Structure formats: C-alpha cells, structure tokens
Length: 237
Image 1 (spheres, rainbow, N blue to C red):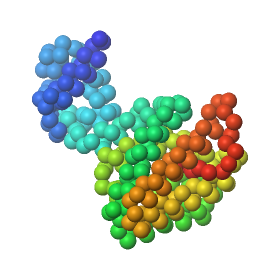
Image 2: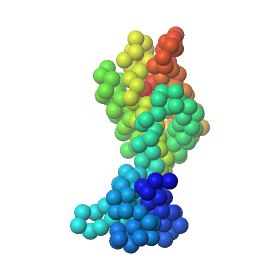
Image 3: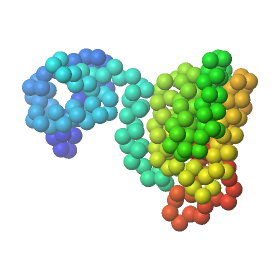
C-alpha cells in the first residue's frame, strides 16, 4: 500500500467509524501525519482525493472539514467514475436505471401538483418544438430531473442524474433514424406525463421503464460492429 493510499484509507476509516463526524474540522496536519505514519505531501494528496469525492471540504483560511456527508452529494460523486464507463459498461447499468426511473415516476404520480404538471408539459412542448439535439438533450434532462425531484428522494434524483449524464454523451437524435427516434421519444414523454397527471403510479412507472428500454435499445447503435436498429422507437433518455 502506498503512503497516499495509507493516508486515504486512514482518513476514510476515521469518518466511517464516527471518530470524525459531518461538519467537524479534521485534526492538524502534524497530528494526522504522526498518527497515520505518512508525510504531509501524502496526506494532502489523500485530502484532495476525498474532497473530489465530496467527503472533505478544504475551506480557505479556516481549515479542512468533513463535509455534511449528504447522501445525494456522495452519490453524485459517482459521476467521476461512471463517466469513464465505455458504452458496453453503461448499457449493463440500464437494468438498474429502468427500475429507478420507474420508481421515481411512480412516486411523482403519487405526489404531483398542478405546478408540477405545468412544468412537465412546458418541457414536453419545448422538446417537441425544436430539432436541435443539444437543446433537446438539455430539456430531456430537465424533464426527468423534475420527475425525480417531485418523487421526493434527493439521493435517487442524484443517482439518476449520474446515469443520465453519461447517456447524454451519445446523441441518438443524430443517427440516420434520428427524426423517428425523436418522435417516439416525444410520445414516451407524453405517456409518462399523462400517467403522472392522472395520478396513476403503476402506469407512470411502466411508461418510464419503457422509455429507458427504448433509450437502451437505441444506444446499441453506437456499439462497434452492431447494425442499426430497424424500427424507430427510442429516446435520448
């Protein structure tokens, strides 16, 4: 184990065991170096690594603190690694995403308000009105993020955001079948929003799961050596 790894796991253990709690200032460098048996350089590198994961917060002029350890922030840091997945790895995660998007939509159907529905249909109408792939992708993200927000679980919303961000690297609307894919995606969004508006959790969950399945199907077109799908169902997800 390298000195940096030793410092990293030592600090991680202090937080995991509750010796250092959310919001607490970590001990002085000299004390930590002596306890962990590492140099200042190794300790500082470990602190930078934990900061990237959202676990530690260096505060200029104040010191270094354990973050608030909000689960949505910790889960959001998964983007550091999920964004590195090749398409094959991303597709393996779509089974998880189908389940989670379905649950989020079902929860939104149970909690929806008139304001929520107005927002969702604004996003839908804006998506249907544009052919710009970048604009559609951003509106699609906002649509699904709003559903997750209304679902009431920030951690779930954060995790789904990580999955969607990686998927957005692949613009399915730029494929030769793009116009047909977009029409199907628009229909999917209306099916999800319609079920939420009817306060039908089962229908909303099923519509969301189908939408993710369409996205997965069309992402296969980007796999090397794979033929393009023959029909035109799908979405940017």
